[in-house]
Amino acid sequence: MKILKSHSKKALISLSLFILALAIFAGCSLNFWDKTEEQSTPDAKTEETTPETDQEETSTKGDISYSTPTEKDIWTPKFKQTFLEAYQNTNPYAEAKTFEDTRKYGKYAFFEVGTINIEKYKDEKLLILVIPCDGMCFTQDTYRFAYNETTKTLTLLKKHSANLEYSLPIINQISTKTDSITNLGNLDAPEQILIPGTDKYAKLDMKDTANTFDLENGSILDAFSEEYVDKTSGIKIYYNLKSTNSVSDGCFRVLLPDGTISVYSFQPNFEKAITDKYDFTAGGCGITGSCYLISNLTDSDLTKTPKSSGDINFSVPKNPKTDETTLDNYERYNIQQEWKVKEDPTLKTLSLNEFIAMEPLLYWQDPLGRWSSVINKNVKPMAECGKPVIYLYPEKTLDVSVEVGIDHLTKTIPKYKNGWKVSAQPNGTLYNYDDKKTYPYLFWEGQNKGVLNATKGSSVKRTGLEKFLNDSLDSLGLNRTEKTNFMDFWLEKMLNNKEDYFFISFVGTRDFNKVAPLKISPAPDTLIRVFMYYIPLDMPLRTEKQDLKAIERNGFTVVEWGGTSSVPWLE
Image (cartoon, rainbow, N blue to C red; front, side, top):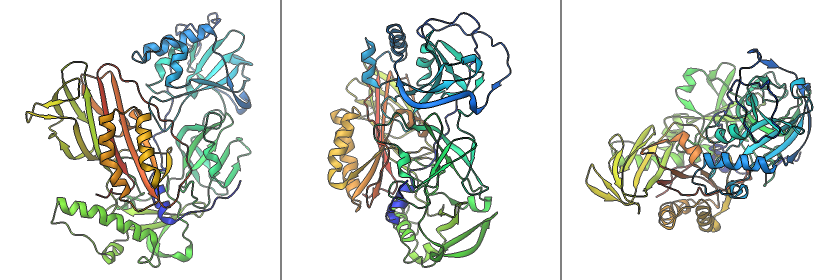
């Protein structure tokens, strides 16, 4: 594979703030193994019965004969009707009257990736179904099935599938059977992998994050210079030895034989004395994780310190006053400190010498000899969520209570007293019962410790930023008022940065609910959350692009937009 050229350290620092770990999505199980006559089509769901045995069936890597993934058309007329009914039950406001109507909201595609060899499913096809997101999301929902081409039986393999509330209702309805017992060997991502050429292990961070057969914009694997094939398991491990203009994190991407990709990270297990004071560099408003940045510094650029943690020794830059990374972090510290001092004039801003004396960055080497850093928590930028605003559109005048699940609210309008209690009108006008005033929306800013990873997005040139935002907000379905308010708040702040490019990622309803969940009573029929994350960059980077789609508004609708950045935004 071709080794990619690296870009500036400053861009790398920014990029490190987003290519980080997500929560692992793991499947859970339902007990089922049908001993009755199999259905002739996957359209009719059989009743679940007690399995023959409660002993888990585990098999070996020879259980599947893999083939090149190809899209599989199992859409018989009856199956289309079954799917349509399941879709209508799960999405009552989607107005999908035909099977073709469901494709307007995202294509559900089956891919044949191999043939199953064990007796229970002898010669049945192993199919993967990738579920599209409503709006946008960072990870796919992956479900695996055994498919009998003769009887048209579609059996969900629960131990090898996702278990997400957003898609399970449809999956349960379209599956002929659900098998929670069978565990096919060499199908799931292993819990850990041996880092090539070392005796250290990297642990599973993100399962089934992508695949090699359902991508419109190429594979993320093309961004890596190193490819290693594990001869025992057959899995392929991809990583970089140096930062590049595409990927600068230290994680490993693992390609399994079925074409799915999972992410692994080495976890250095620093001692408490280090973790109490230092942390991995993080992004804003919970957009962060556990993959670490690779720095292209060399041994000659660093000086060892007495600090250590286990078998890991720490270093600092030899010349911190000229070190780009140190100066870049000091600039960010000053930007945020200026805002803090406005809030509290008693606070002091550190001089550069005082900043350096705090050892803001400590460098350490991972098992591959790659340098990375941790940042002093006392100078680490806060994770700030920038101006999320909430619009309420009931079908008729309605009393509504709203609560935001955030670690710390820094500013709210109207005043937040364990939530807001308002009377909402269909045009979005809100009457706040506490101060007896009228508002166009609910406003909040806050800080969060949650973990979320923006791994998909677009690199946008400065001169094309306004058009990109306009087009993206149109694609996401914001109305004229919402879009105008968004642009008025964010465009000028983004252009105040001096860099020529921006990486921009939009977090959707499903993913942002993990960082700052909303509690709304009565519950809305439609919830749309659009949250932008951006990174100013010296040059563009290559990532998987997002498919931005609008969620149709029906019934009582709640819309929220907001944003954050890898650096404190400039006023």
